[in-house]
Image (tube, rainbow, N blue to C red; front, side):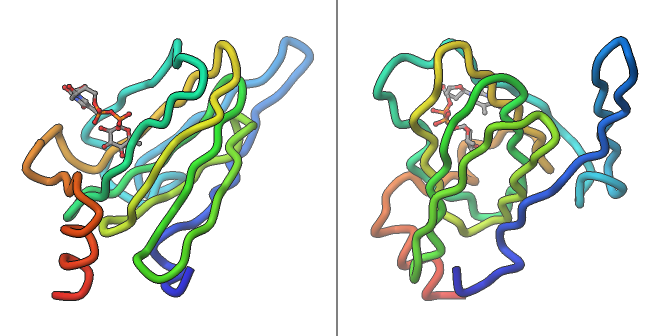
Length: 137
Ligand code: T46
């Protein structure tokens, strides 16, 4: 990735004891933005690729709280793939990053914390439009 500030792996503190684990996420402490929306992706079918879009302004943190999935990240110059496989590992994705989520294991649950409410007009769903968007900036 050329712009390293656009994506970042986050490591969350586990409050573990003899009963098991607990992770608490607070806006601005653990998550670098005001959390406006939470959603989760589950029951993903075999060989499915989700995402395939970028956002004009939305920031998000992705956490695979159960199981494993991979996320392809593309800033228009370079592509890299990150594996999310632990509940204490988060992937911060800023705006203007093309993402694709794939290789979900059976039962995987991908939790997403988002900086804004759902707004379809914030999505860039065509790759050529994404390239134009980042060139204009
Ligand atoms: C992203 C990746 C990581 C809503 O109504 N509200 C919501 O908050 C969301 C996220 C989705 N939807 C509706 C819109 C579609 O009819 O749920 C349906 C599936 O959404 P989409 O095809 O955009 O899902 P993914 O998995 O391709 O992408 C999602 C997020 O939309 C996106 O912002 O970055 O997860």
